[in-house]
Length: 391
Ligand SMILES: [Zn+2]
Image 1 (tube, rainbow, N blue to C red):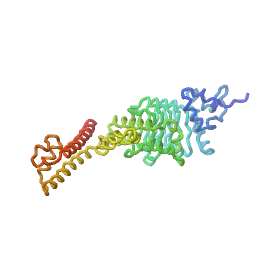
Image 2: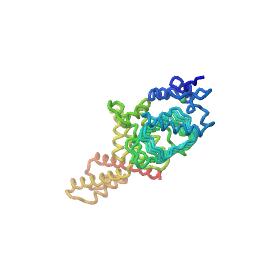
Image 3: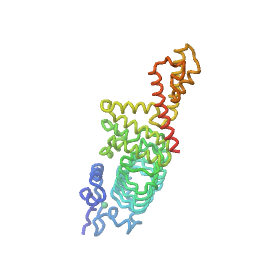
Image 4: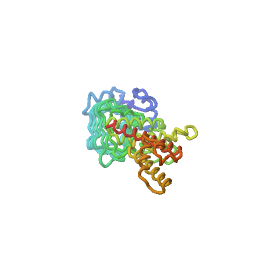
């Protein structure tokens, strides 16, 4: 009897991959098309080939491992991508392996632990829709573009960038970390990583460089551009459906909380400022003029309560500026008693009427000085409180 073709094909994918939702599968079918259709023959008396057979990884792991390595070698020599879509993997180590072509691990099931430490992916690595049942190590890994969209990590997962591959693009979009306290992602820049709609609280994220715009904010701005190229184009293709300003704002908040949780306050503070700037951009001058104005004032005085230096500088400028001006206008020279008087007024312990040399000054000037000093002192209080509470 002639053997049948393996059942793992596009028309059956919704039935086979029941754990995943239709939207995810639609997107994967759209991206990978006929690459999903398995070209292997089914095993004797079975519906699937050895790679797609849900039991082979348990019954014949050694044989399966050998065949997987052979398949990788064969595809690397003959095709422009290595197709492992939907494969069931036993425990397998790819340590030190170099992958020269695009690697399609999409929809794979890693039943055992996997180790990609010191591996080099020179092409793109697709790990979307994958279930990592045991630990997954990607230590000192070199990525170009790696997509982990809608994957789930049931156990520990550690990612660390190779020294020479820090500008790679990593998508952790809609990813589920079951044990976030056992997850670390280190060495890549946040401007090259997406955590859109992924809960990262409890994970350890150590970004490589000071935080600028996160990847998704940049991609969101690029959405309407026509000539998006390279990794950005690949990233947008997957993220487009959920790339909104609300989602980006939530992502900022989410990453910031994770950083604060790990006591990385400088990075968290930079993210907070970016988050507020994004919020400010959403405000419309016609609808919320006062809110918009207070955003600008708050940023100017203390960078949204994150700078202690700014309100102190502004307060000193207010004290010396106004006392110098008043002193020159009233006496034609500089007298130190004006500094002492304005200092006391700024700290709200005296008023102009307490000093006989200031009684001629109009009331509105005193009101203005008091108002500014209250604003600077208030901001200083907020910034100090935030800084001390974090320590
Ligand atoms: Zn198959």
